[in-house]
Image (cartoon, rainbow, N blue to C red; front, side):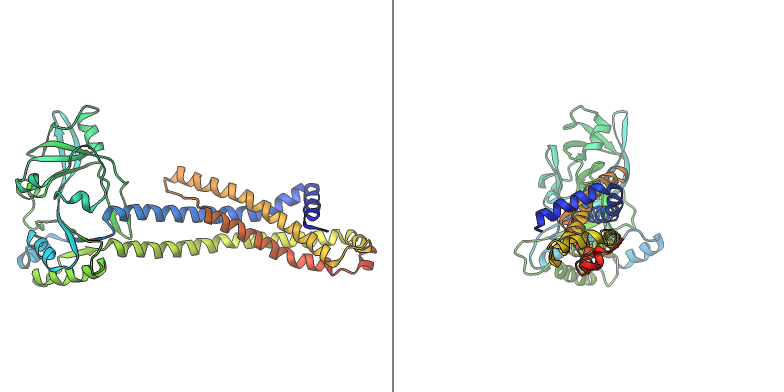
Length: 413
């Protein structure tokens, strides 16, 4: 018997026992569906983490002033250290090898901003003209801040698209005046929504939809800040592509430099997106491994079901096996016949499982808002393992059928 004849025989037998065949494939269907859906959730989470880390910049080192501390602790720090200042920016630029850009950032506490009688919530951030070169932003209209704006602490701003709609509706925003606290600002640019806010490895990355960017010098001079706060909230350091050191090595150099400049006061912290990226990938690999193992158990249970039903099939077709052996079928023919039938069950379950897995992934994405990505590798892996489990589960029943004695089989009732 060749493989084609074995396939036709398996199809005929399965068609004659539709309910049993359906119940047998369910284990494989759910196993494959679980593998694909789990891996798609993992791939979606990894993609989201990569997008968030890309916002931070993979060649950047971010130095942040510690702010979420009790006032008495901040007061004690300020008595020994001025906090993160422009002096630190200049020192980093001079002392750290391979540095391409160093940009300060000032976060002003959220304000109500208004244009006429309309108001909206916004996060006011002071940045330099180099900000677009350090992080990924999308400029929809107008221009971003330039060196002239920063040098002369101009009262201009660039706003996010959501804030623009709240303040101006669908009217043009460029050239309009808005009031943030007691400071009047002219809108010179509008940003796209950008990536959604989120966090990766404990580091939050915000959206620019409600952000209002002003020159860093304007933020320092014209917006009120508490005396115990650090003058700068953050310094972003970007290494050149041909930098002689890695971002993690640069972070160690910067840490030692700031320790000297701040008199040993531990008032800053560093974020290295490159390290976050590697950590996120390791976490994702572990997640995929655990989820794949859990889903693989379902495939193993499905394989046990296939073995059980194949053993029952051998028992009920014992006389048929005897007849085939009596008319000249070899042991190999019997082995191939039952292996092909086991393969057919697992392959059918695998194909149905792909449909179920893709459906579950899309349902999770729609219901929970989690990103899911169904990859070709996950589909091939899940179906391949299902077929392998089916063949492995059918091997023992097929060998048992092939070893049956023809005379005893013909006498079987």
